[in-house]
Length: 199
Length: 199
Image (cartoon, rainbow over all chains, first blue to last red; front, side, top):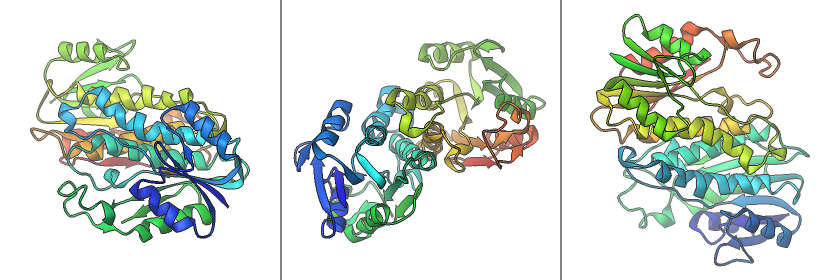
């Protein structure tokens, strides 16, 4: 298969690359590194990325960030950071991708743990995650040509333990291999409309 | 208790009014009817509503709509209708409400069935619902002064059966009383960070 991985150099995207690159042609995409450079917050950049990549069998997105801070001090603009930097770019990858994805291909998005196991200050991210989980469930029933869509929702990665030290008390840390298996199932498996939880 | 119900004249909001008005002072809010007129898609209108209402013990929101159409024909702007017309107005009711809600008060938002039991063309609404469900889970752990936050996620209402005829095959229809109980639990109960499913 030809697989685009957006956010390939990130901790989560790297799990997908590790899991898939031995068996598939993986096209690495990043804002500042990779086989193709693209900023998926810019729809024109998404379109240019697809034109450069050509037809693919799978699109894997492992990008996005949100605002962190107490909800009672959060502004509407801060809340929207999760929508604009995590939800909408990944949705746009799907909306713009139909002309470039082969029959029976797949889209795999990435949400995260905070809409099932919250931390203080995480309401913006929890909303973005919930929206992504809901979107794939809703979108799966519309997909033409046997195309599938799923989302991977990983706990904190073992490799990110130090980066997030103190922010996720009591949360488990998951291995690159465990996260990679979820992307493998999404890309190489048969299910659609699923939230693949890794925790 | 003093309870604001936004969208009081709608089918869902009416369930909350019916369930709460015998025991509480209910302030009905609507765009074109009610004790206070407000358009919660406009933050200034939300602020004016709160100033007119004064201090309250509970805020119930039963408003919002999204775009319906196949995901492979949906534009980014159409997708954002669910964010701008259902998610963000309800989130803004919370963000703007802290100065007007009493200690141990509650916010109750409304999502819906489509992020657990999808229908064709419902991916925009499913994303908005998922975002609302995620938001309350994340926000609950931040809430100051014992304030609670929950979301009611109802199936199609019996009173809306004809309006949605043919769009929700096999879905159950729920009574006003069943939906009202969920708002009663959210406003008068003790739980927080919950999605109260009615189906």
